[in-house]
Amino acid sequence: MSKTILSVRNLNKVYQDDKSVILENVNLDVEEREFLTILGPSGCGKTTLLRCIAGFEDYTGTVTTDGKVTKDPDVDRFMVFQDFNQLFPWKTVKKNIQYPLRIQGLKDKDELERIANETIASVGLKGYENYYPYQLSGGMKQRVAIAKALALKSKIILMDEPFAALDAMTRTRLQKELLNISKKTDCTFMFVTHNIQEAIILGTRILVFGDGGKILVDEKNPLAKPVSPSSEGYGEFWDRLHSALYQSDN
Ligand SMILES: Nc1ncnc2c1ncn2[C@@H]1O[C@H](COP(=O)(O)OP(=O)(O)O)[C@@H](O)[C@H]1O
Ligand SMILES: [Mg+2]
Image (cartoon, rainbow, N blue to C red; front, side, top):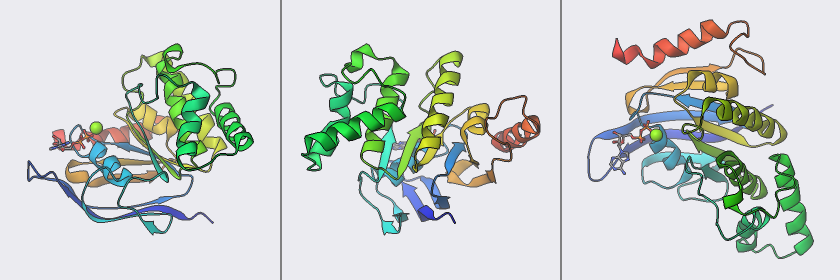
């Protein structure tokens, strides 16, 4: 039996300087270990929703993480940014992963070593423990960020169009790597993308947002993993998401 790891209730968001309603009464339940991909037109509030869930924004309504109301940022929700420079440039991969654990008060050297080695291996970076961020590709840096989340035992990893700036080949490779990582952890992922194919390849469940964060589509992915454009039913599902995504243009 899966459990609800994240619950968003009646979430409303208005930015102070503007006054227009960005998110209007958003309600959403996410199951543990789901890989939720979110599509939606530019400006519909996807980033804002992730930021509210992460605790970076004020809002009205409730966000509950694993049964606890979460209003402020904490390690149970971890945001991976599109920007590749989210690591300390003067710390190695291993030290970047260990740093937040030390801040949390973990002092046991063996335990720090074990956690770093385990999480580095699970994101496929074995051998890069002592590299500095400038020695890594953008995708590798993102994987170190994910390893940080795994080390902190974050429950929900929030990813806001992390692959948008990458070329198609790198993007395909990173999607595969992310799928492998997600299979190996109990984490739940919320992943925003503009790319319908990416949403179908990664998601176990796909949402399409309209303006105001209105949920236009909320479907379990009907295609078995690994999904490719030649999977049976792919075209039909892609069409359905595409027409929902562009319905406001018609
Ligand atoms: N800090 C801010 N202050 C005022 N308005 C903002 C701010 N951030 C985003 N917005 C507005 O909120 C709306 C939703 O933005 P965003 O969540 O970034 O959309 P998306 O990620 O779906 O493209 C947009 O109209 C944007 O202009
Ligand atoms: Mg955005």
